[in-house]
Length: 519
Image (cartoon, rainbow, N blue to C red; front, side, top):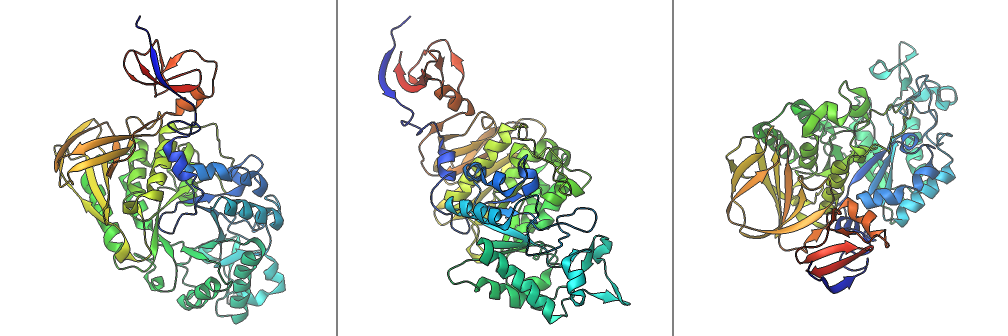
């Protein structure tokens, strides 16, 4: 056996810095992300931890930061009523659900989020209250009636419709919005069911700018639960910062697990881009949320999308807009969570391919201008679909913003695909996300493209390239474990796999350290 010469001994703070890969370093930046480079996480406090409290969730905020989350949207945190325990049937808009904790606990949660440069948005339910809400007895005049009887909106038997023709009701609702800014220093509101015909556009036109200017130096963001661009068009100019790209998600769900051609996805994406043209607000894109996860017949990501779930996630989080992920989606999204009863997330369920795909996509979102989003449609990156020959299952597109370019390729077919793509910028490109290796860990590899380039993609595979030159990275989820064992004398390669002994020059791991070795 040839003698091994160790040219350089590299400690944990060497190549990858304290055994943390480059995606972790990007996502856990100490800088607050600018608007247009943010990711939002929908959290049900009762489901998120076994304790189901603000305090327990607070202890995991740093985990979300590492995942790449910038905004935590809390599903309704108010006391529940109405008889079926819906979080959207509040009994008091200025109290917290006692099972979750106190207002003081919520304030501590927000303070910790702010320390991590994250924002917290509350779920606001403007259309109705629980049938046994405090206002039912203290302010019956706040409720709409028909024939002298209160109204169940949409035949929801657990809630009563509020009356937006009553000025005192408007003032009371606005006081509640101000209350949480004063008491807990929250940063925004996700507004439920804004498409309700019972809430006039004039209410939002007056309320949104008032709340935004309520406290000097405090930025408050409004997300509206509606596809304003396609459906609730009367609300296009009332001041919402983001809407739901609802139609796009519905199209992806219809594509589902049986889709295997690129043409339909291209058509769906073009519709999204056309609907988004000329808007003065941003768009939130997603593959699931609490409604899709529990209220639909096909609940989990596997039920909805099958083996397409990974590639469709990449599409949704790169083609346009601000990404949303739902409670536990990072575990694979294969648990239906009953939010009426706060089903606990099974954190023992793991899907490293999904988690690593998500955190890499979010790192890209954070630092690559071509994946930014803007509330002004004219300032969004351009999305260009490329000509693909050789396989009808391959979709390829480039997003461009100034000198920044990102290339996304998806193979939706049921077998490995070879495809030729034309219209590429020649020169250096960096592969940041590769479906063939992402389950093992993040990596980054340099390649050189011609204007016409052939690619081989695995079944349901995907790749995301960034134009330019970046440091090459070869890390694995196994590496952290290997680097944490200083007395392990076995040799490992940079995928974390055990080898007998190095046989060619390279970087290897032994005794918890990385070494450059020349056999």
